[in-house]
Each structure stands twice: as C-alpha cells, then as structure tokens.
Length: 519
Image 1 (spheres, rainbow, N blue to C red):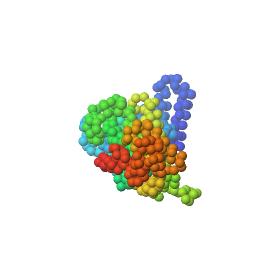
Image 2 (image 1 turned 45 degrees about the vertical axis):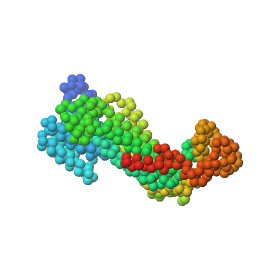
Image 3 (image 1 turned 90 degrees about the horizontal axis):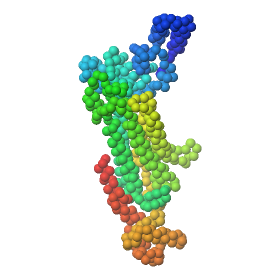
Image 4 (image 1 turned 135 degrees about the vertical axis):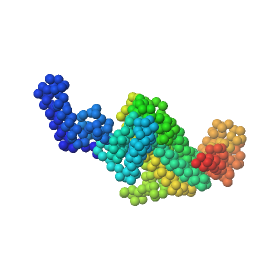
C-alpha cells in the first residue's frame, strides 16, 4: 500500500533539477542567505505535492517529522513497514492507548474531557476492527500509526496528544506482552485438552499390552496406557513452562518513553495495574530493549514441538502395515494422487515437519538479537514474525494432535502378536535375583537361556524346569511356567512392575489419578 505517484516523482526531480541549476549559477558562492530561497522553494514544492512528508502528515510520516525534507524510497517504505503482520495486535494496541490516555489525564496533561474523547475515539476504532471495517491506508507503517491516524480522523487534534511522552519503543513491546499474555492462556487451554484426551484413553484402555522399544528394538512389554501417559507428562511440563514464563511476560514496559524514562511523571504502577500487569519493568533501557521473553516463549514452543514430533514419529510407525498397532481416522489422513490403495498419515508427518519450523524461528531470532546493542534497535522489529508464526503453528499442532489422538483406534490383537518371549528375559534374571543370585551373574545366565532356545530352534516357553536347571541350579519349575501369572505370561510381566511410575495397572492408575487431579 506504500506508493509514490508519477506526479510526485516528477515534482521531486523538478525541484532537484532547479537546485542543481542554482548551484551551477554560483548562488552558493554568495553564502547561505542566497541559497535560502531555492531551498525554501524546494520544500514548498514537496509540501504541496500530495502524500509528501510534512509535520501535519499522519501514518508513516509520524516517524519522520520535521527532521526530514527528502522523500522516502517507496521500496524503503515497504521494507520498513510491519503493518502486514503486527495488525493482529490491534486490540492490545487500543487497550494500551486507552490506559495511557487515562495515565496522561492523571498527570494533568489532559483534561477529563480530553481523556473521555480519546477513550470514545479509541473504542470507535476498536469497533471498526471488530466489524472488519477498518481501512488501512498508504502510510500506515504499523498498527500504532494506523490506529493513531484513524483516531485523529475521528476525534481531531486531541488525537495528537495521545503520544505525549510515549515512544513506539515502549508502545510496541507493551502490545507484544499483552498479546503474548492472551496467547499463552489459550495455548495452555489447548494443551490441557490434549492431556485430558490422553488421560481418558489411558484409563479406559489399560488392557492393551504392547512392546516397549529402546533403540527401536523390542525391549519389554508395557501397557498401551503407559505409552499414552508418557506424552501426557511431557505436555504437563509444557503447560508448566508456559505458566512459569507468564510472570516474566506480565511486566509493564509502558511509560519509559524511548529509552530514558517519562518526562511528565506518569504513574507507571497504576498504568500497569490498569492493563492487568503484575508489575513494571524497573529499568527503562531494559524495558524497551528486552526480547528474552519472546525467546523464552519460542524456546518453550520448540520443546513442545519436539514432544509433538516424537509423538508423531511413534504413531507414524505404529500405524504402518509393518506395526499395525493403531488405525488412524480418515479425518487426519490423506490419499495418494497416483496409488489408490494409500492412506498416508499426513497430519502426523506435518506435526513432525513443523517442529523444524518452530525450532528454526527460535534460532533465527536468537541470532538476530545476539548482535544488537542495548535498548531498542530496528532489528527488534524482526521479533514479531517468528513469534506469531511459532504461536500459530504450535496452536494448530496441539489441536491437530488432540484430534488424531481422540479418533485413532488401537488394535490390541496386533499389539499382542508383536510381543515375543525374549522380551521377558529380564524377568528370568529377576527370578534368580530373588533367590540371591547377584544381578550380573543372573543377567549372564538369562542370556545363556536365550541362546539355548535359539540353539534348539524353539521358543523360551518350551524349555522345561530341568532344562533351565542345567544352566543354573536355582531355577525353579515356576521359571518355566507359561500359564496365567507364570514367567512367560505378558500380563504377569507388566504386573511385576508395581513401583510408582511403572507399567502395572496400579502404576498406570496412579498416573491417571495424579493427572486428573492436576487438570
């Protein structure tokens, strides 16, 4: 939306040409006084040209003021503008301005009537945004200038008083903190919903036993519920990280001006309270230059996305024909444009893929901030796109993960079929440990039992008690039992893990109860 008309360009070229002519005629040889008419003529020409920078202009021109007489390259206007992405903070920007107008009123800089007029105008601007009627115009560099421009159109000259003592340096970071505060609460709600889904399924589906894996090799049997709760605990920590950072996000930078403080004695504590902040940023330089609260959010988002990626990888494997442990709902799968038989786990693959996107945003902004000196620098405008993108991505991913988890169907038969007796070799060594055999010796003996079955080309449950005693004399007949509760019974194996945090029914139910209480 930032354009310079051909007539403006022609006017600029004409004035520059006139100035060069006066120089060549030797006008500067007679001193500054002789040059003044030409300079004044140039500035009049620029001021008379539509949309050219001047003190009375609003929008992009606000940041240029009377300091500048030259026009901005239209490409630079586009390069400099952030309205395309920071307009999503319109509500936070207006709420901040309403509170700031009240703060100026308390100092006596604004009359009660002026404060009321500004409040009324700002609410009118908010209504336009709510109804989708707000019109962005050329020169609306960012959400702050856009809102102030529209406010001034509505209320007149008093709109120009709103920015007294305020800089976009403290204004923008206030908006971001307010926006993040709302976003964090929303994300917490979605994550809690995802945890609730996992907990409900875990409590209802404790009968399913599946292989647990290390190094992607079958290791020991576990309950399907135990696997579900593994991720529920990770997501709980994700919520707690967001809760922890809230107190650092919820500090008010507004009222410190560009970097050195406010010249008119604004009560920052009352201002912070009006906006629902828990306190104020105590150092004005830190207030306008700090972006670690955004980096902390991005880091926390990256960790959550790591959890999403690992969940996705597990379920991609478990839903494949090679595993078949779960069946994904059609709502979260797609087909192939060529192969009609295909059902692809695209939702899960995108969860896995988008984790790299969020991690990339984190590393990118860290690299941007790393090189900046203290206080505000324009580099910090680059904070919002990674923040917004990461937040949008995380919010969508959590909801998609919830949908996938809520609608998939476990296949208990496939899980059972994937279990094999060597997964119980550790239980065999535990049998000897209970009889006083040192674990290292028992571990070696259990390995010898597995090798004996391999040499005989039979399964472990086919070895008799006598076969086992030939390998170690302390083996009892119960070590060869394959009946209910016996050595080679998978249900008995998981029930032997009775400690808190284990995969037994008791261990699973303890987790379910704890998470329900937390939720």
